[in-house]
Image 1 (cartoon, rainbow, N blue to C red):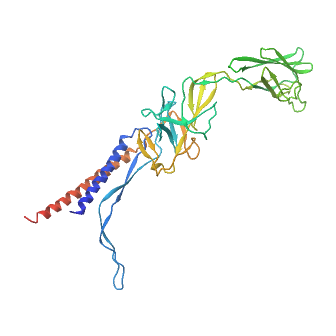
Image 2 (image 1 turned 60 degrees about the horizontal axis):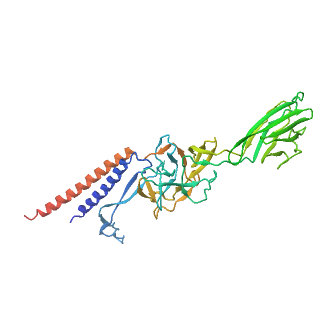
Image 3 (image 1 turned 90 degrees about the vertical axis):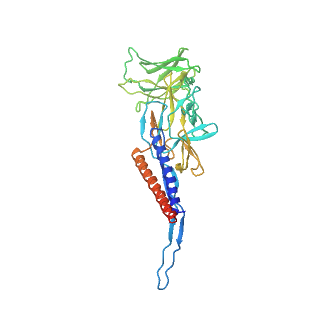
Length: 402
């Protein structure tokens, strides 16, 4: 049989594969996180009709004469260029800006995806819709995330509780007017709410009184007044001098288990700016909403007015992402040629940052795909003509004998 017949058949088969790949790309033009593929061809073995000859005295060398035996698909590669972003406004939609993949788990299998359209199930687990794959990351313990620890399923359950914390320290800052009148005595009343271990709040009040001998202080949290005594300031620097009844530090005192720090007070003239600076206690609260940071940190807003880290998404990156296998559902799995995932937080180790309220769309270029359709169609058509022509030649050969 004619070699051209089989070359044409291989061309038909290869261009049909190109049509299949192009059709799949076009079908997924609006698939979140989809990465398009391209087909590469290469020729097959060539039959040698005449070997090459070396140059000799009086005669020149000759080139080999070879006839190719057709074409085959060399490979189908995935294009991992960034897709366009689509703003959705949903707090659970996340987009990777740069390299990296979200990590999800289905049973005991680990998968990777660029599709960040997440939802929550009835138990508060973050999942991929339709697949039920569990999003992987690091859960926070008391608001602290250890990115060196093992990965776990991320959970953001509604109504999560932030435990109450008893106040152990409080601090004040500002200036006490050294020139304030002492007749009648000047009194500055300042308060701050502090908490016990159950989250019950009480008011801690400080009364600063200016009399003939200078400023003095009395504190009270409702359990009885504490006479701190005179407040003395350095005449040159205005800094507070050690207290006569000092607590843990020379410029602090204790009130019912709360250490009140006054070291930031000054005693210059002309200003009364004393105010409470900080206290480290808090009431209990429940989760009201959450937001995603560019580093993948999920921060929850609680009913007590405070924010706390809930967890952090993990991203995986690969030396050769084109070596990943498509597993359906916009998921990828590792192969022997992709290498193992290098796990880390967003924005580190070459991994991209995250944007909340947005999705990465397909990176399919329709103009390029329609051009590929034409190329594949014409290639298929041309190879079919090779088969038709070869058939006509065989027909002429058969017609030699009538």
